[in-house]
Image 1: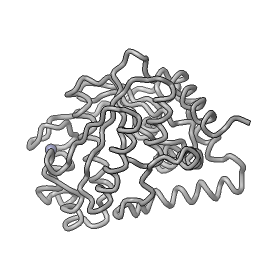
Image 2: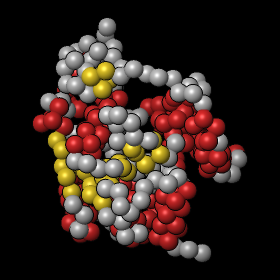
Image 3: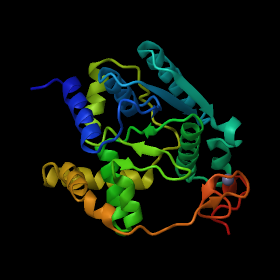
Image 4: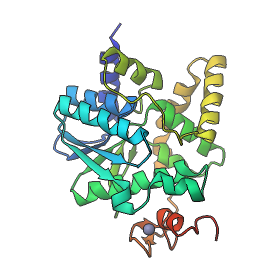
Length: 278
Ligand SMILES: [Zn+2]
């Protein structure tokens, strides 16, 4: 029986190879939150001798962001990984606090956009080839399950392990796509890594939690349901990729210039108080 350390390392190594995620010469940026998944990925990439840098985004969540920043500083210092910190409030003049007042319950949607824009822009401006995100198999399966309800192919594609870069968007890869949630939990515990165990006070994640519950229930009824469900999807990925893609025309947001499908990007619409109100 391989140790959890070896098991996770093998899975990551296989995923990088199977999906041709990146090469050693690529300039890699790890999206680091301080949670168990991104800290696991940091350690594994280190063990696999990859050269990379990490980016932490301070979202301005009282107490939670401070605890997270302390954890990422600790692990990066210990493992000698260059760490960059971007503060949402400085860059975008928005923090999750602003959102709570005007859009209670919508913090996660706005936070997701904030992170996507900031990670992407930092990667592009600093010449990184690939952004590594630490989504595990359970994260991807839950998202896929949610999007499967409507069979919207453009959304189903988002659950693929590699999202190729295009104009204005850096390539994103998910090296933990074969790794289960329980495994990163075990891994960080086994290696006594400094990780943030608290969850974000805003992440009530209502719909995500419901999908998790459905998948957990399915796992009880059909052994390995979640794993089979996601891996079968990966097996059919070629079909999905061969389908013609609907071209969404993106334009620079009138306020901040970020590419957006609407006149104002979601963040600027939130700041102006017109998001979902027009
Ligand atoms: Zn904007």
